[in-house]
Image (tube, rainbow, N blue to C red; front, side):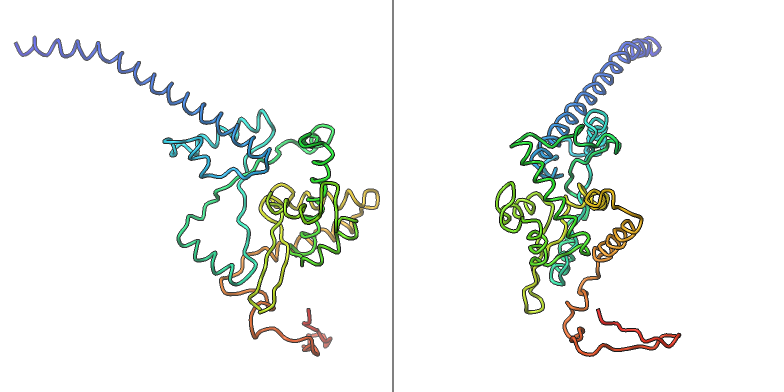
Length: 306
């Protein structure tokens, strides 16, 4: 009797096993379809955000694309980037954190970093095509609102980012105005007033205005913001300078560009909280009197005046 009772059970298991395999395959197929749907949503979202020059925020991806599948972010992100590269010649790139250039700003950033996750939460699309395919006749500026307006805007924000970068990574507000005046763009530009142009560059994330009152005197300086660093970067800055010099570009010009870029990198290096430049620290700066002189080994005097 015991043997006869066990036999149906074994038979039943043999009959049920194919059904369970089919269920597993259905679940795997459903999971793949869900992954593909989320990937398509993320690709469309990335293209729409880049068209409007809006950062692709991690929070928006979770809310509008992933929904309850937030744990699948890495898989969806990798698959979306693969499709962007193979179909559109672009990929999502993390936006860097903009370094705070004032003592008070660095202190606030340190307080926030203790409470918030330090991972990057925003992305932009960057070009992955080889250099030979990045010509304007292959990748022209958008035609909305007009071809000429977008061409002018791209040229102007590339010029401004280049000036700030070659100026050491930061530039006083009045100094940038002088550069714009030399190009007859201190009042109006082909796409509107200079004030509105700079405001648009700030909104789009190409430049950022730093206001420092820690010394008792208001200091206003422009720096390159996150999108400017990613979209233009050092390669774009050097390319614009070589384009301006054209046939007069020499090896000496390349060395000068590299020195300027090194200065910008040094100024962008993170500083410890509570420390700034010698001019920012109260009581540590010297007046413009006679500089101290130190004797070198060879007997030649060296001045440390900046």
